[in-house]
Length: 508
Image (cartoon, rainbow, N blue to C red):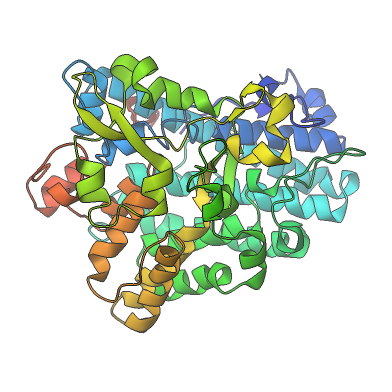
């Protein structure tokens, strides 16, 4: 794997993040330039901000890795013949030119972002202790380790094999270097056990010592008299987000004991319950002025997007999106996704009636829809960080609820973690906070439906189906009725495993 050597800098976020949209990339001309960047606290945090800005780009978690490419793969949306690209993605056609281009962009941008994190890690080892307070040293190093682990895990989940079929098959490289090198393809087992878990364990250790999220929570308020280096913890891969990532990694390789242990660090921590409570239904139901459609209090890691409403208008709003419209098939949401449980807060707050290009009626996702205030649409940093409208500019990447789902699945699994009573307790904790009654039967179906309801627009559902090597039955897809493809391990592998980009293969 060969990557261009560059680092990220940024105009440091000041005031109320008014500079968020102005973050820059640049390529240093020589070593002196790099030394200058990492000679001050502000330089370090500018570089860190640049990494997060790349992660929130449309190429990664601000688009392809959330509501568009990933959710098309996950069969959330019906696609017509008038959009060849959407049709190709939804049919898992990895030979389509535009799909090839998207996949290549995801890969290259992900690994170049990893390289940027590595360069920050290199410099913090070399000079960080001389420049940074111990708290900032621990926070920055911990976050960048978590960033590296998170992106590698998602590349593995996207491009690697179905784990339970081929745990030792070559998958992707793990890049913990800071100069371009051709790195070997490692197996899923090797990457997760020897690299991802290693990085996340160190990240947790550092963040547990210093992350203000533990005692202060999101800290989503502007510091009027100083900097915001340690504020807005939901926009950083903080301690709690790193814990969920570890649970996610263990779950991917079927290590239920460790997955449960990590998940319980979230579900059983009173500080999490205090600082990241389940969404207040009062901010959802009957609130047509400024509803918290993103369930922002439950976001452990997300990104800031002052123009979040543009995503809604460009992809989910019939009035603006044209051929880009992303909607499920007619009646799917009410009869299948929320069938029999339309009182679910997610159904009421995150989906609304719309129409398709053919004129048929359906329910469309409004999770990204903006908030209208007395001064107009919320689309400017100047009002985005008014506390009341904070949740109008955040988008979720890692959620509190995932920890409960992981704990539930680990408890339900056969083996030493098997405890069905606990499994239902964890999943019912989410259900009761979604306005639903508790259940004690048909666990697997319930868990599948929870993933589909909870992570619409956020890219996690495809990984759930791939991990379990599941078929998309009529009950499980918004694209079409019946089987999407014939059952069978070989067929599923072809659909779920995205080929490595040609440029990557040429470099080997």
